[in-house]
Length: 249
Figure 1 (tube, rainbow, N blue to C red):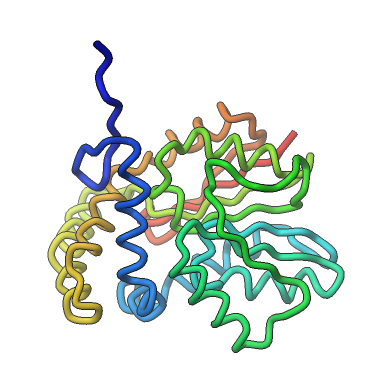
Figure 2: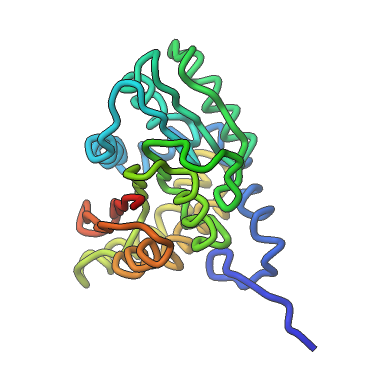
């Protein structure tokens, strides 16, 4: 008799077919104050991490960009300016609540004409082969159930020579920083979540999901195994965050 397959949801083991729903519940809960919490949690440094991602993207006028797990649209907004009216940005997220917040925010900021919104699962991207010049996924890969499947899906829809950029929480590079980060993550984050969003559990999950995400070298190897070339990563803030880059051959 075969065992039912499980995966991790934070530190819990849950059936594979339950994870997506549980992650969805987390982001339905935090969507309305997602930007505020990002600023509070990172002291605004997440904006610098995203700026570096933009700089390494190589995106220019006329390009097509897919912003997976695009949330409230920080990267999509910047990309819409870079690609110009001849280009296209697709803001994609599996979570309807996050997507609605992102769409409304971008509309309020005057983004129109070169941006579309798509509710999409990173594991099964609903786009033709060889469509995009660049794909970004910022702080979303750790929530994907089958990361290998998602990476192969991203490779498929990239054009040859196109770039994938994965911005994600990672592993601090010193013992001292690790201890301080653990204290912050498991004590302060849930408290802040409770105070600002009345939801401590979602931010406890955030801390746990970061610890379960592959470290820098493991993710680099996973990208290479999925078929990406010239894979590399850049640590930021002592390795608390890493930006991985790979190219479609």
